[in-house]
Image (cartoon, rainbow, N blue to C red; front, side):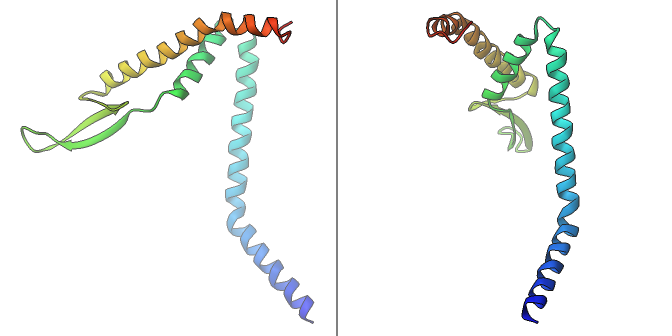
Length: 131
């Protein structure tokens, strides 16, 4: 009797949890599937694109740079709230200026990658890791 009651309660709890969490799991799996399909399509498209490496380099460099943060502070002259934009500890009055500085930073990181690339390839060639 006790085993049947325990099994019944656990089954009911599992069913309720599945009913409550089921749509969230399905949505997560659909998102994962969509991202995976997008990645595969991007890889297929990149095989025929000669400048795909530049796009990937910029994407990796962009991941290494922090985002621009929107800050609301009071204007020292009028005391009214004013929106400012912060990037790497520097405050900008316009988002365009902050985006410009961020783009410069991303470009510097990408150029650094290409500066270091010949030495990295030479090291891999010496170690026999590059065909």
